[in-house]
Length: 111
Length: 114
Image 1 (cartoon, chains in turn purple, yellow):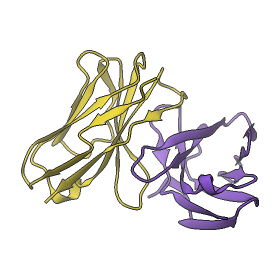
Image 2 (image 1 turned 180 degrees about the vertical axis):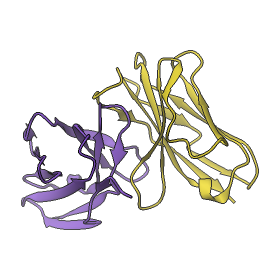
Image 3 (image 1 turned 90 degrees about the horizontal axis):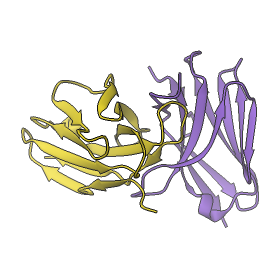
Image 4 (image 1 turned 120 degrees about the vertical axis):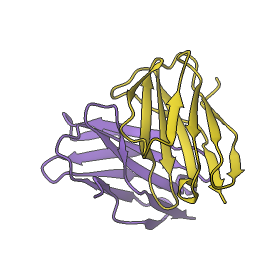
């Protein structure tokens, strides 16, 4: 039973356009969410986080939106760049300790 | 500054053997986490340490898996009687404190059990 789901295994976007990566969760106790980016043969790199007291957090080209009633969050990247091509993981925790990761979405930004 | 390092980067072993995987966290980080990532999946939580003690080991799949952090810095994940299903990338992460803080990941150790 996956508590964190990323239903799109892959996504292709044209350079300069917006990338939208989606994540759904089932555990209503989750109160802290993160997005990580992973390149091949490297560990995941932290991108951006959001706590359940907010519905939006922005950092440069990256914005995370949280819809608690729908148990859904999304990561927007705009404008998308070829260097953004990677696997993106959504992660969630209840109390910020034991993080549950989704299976990831592979983003390809086409030049 | 130095990030999280893990050794070895690759480990090939035979079924039934014992392996140790090492993690050097970022200096000063008190929390250390172990995850396992299988092909096509996200990282799966195994255990986390706050200082020297295992604060949560609920993700360890069975008693063949054990981890230590005797001095509150370096940690070793130990797997006894390895099975083919243990083959995965084992990731280590550290954070300054536990609880909502950003986790910094190492590059992982790819374990292959033949």
